[in-house]
Image 1 (spheres, rainbow, N blue to C red):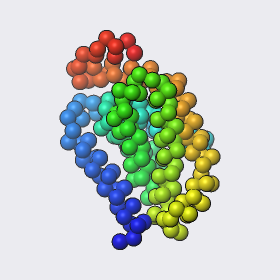
Image 2 (cartoon, rainbow, N blue to C red):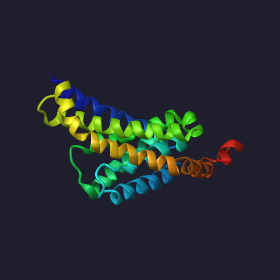
Image 3 (cartoon, rainbow, N blue to C red):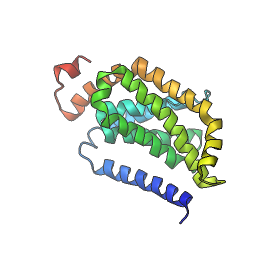
Image 4 (cartoon, rainbow, N blue to C red):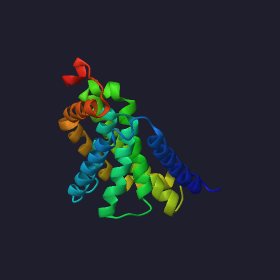
Length: 207
């Protein structure tokens, strides 16, 4: 089996396992309403920003969802927003990979939540990192799927042309998370209190 086929099958397998994990996880049904609202908001934001190349609010919203609601919810928001927004912007072989990378962005927000809740700068840094990682990952998918070859030299040649767009993506994430990240996390956590029937600590309630 070629390297390109291994990369493609590996990415799809990770996506499938993530979807199965979310479906079987605890609390999925109870938080489904919040997740659906965030998917719709991320979709609307992506469509609204469509005129600005590579400005992708889906990344920031998925990270916020992960921090506030947990890794499973963050992954579901990222993957769901990719699928729903592409219904309007165009479905294609790129959709599963966008679902994968945005899902991983949301999951990372949940896994790093303790640090991200304490620091606006940490939240902004994660957004910047995912703006760059997302573009690099999609370039790898492009080479794996369409060639000419999945090699380091081919990746450098393709990715060099995409760096300005990745910088726009990263900058958009930094601005959105810096301005609205922590307030939105606090709002979602208060909503999660009612959905999950959990009392927030005084520190959480005052955010």
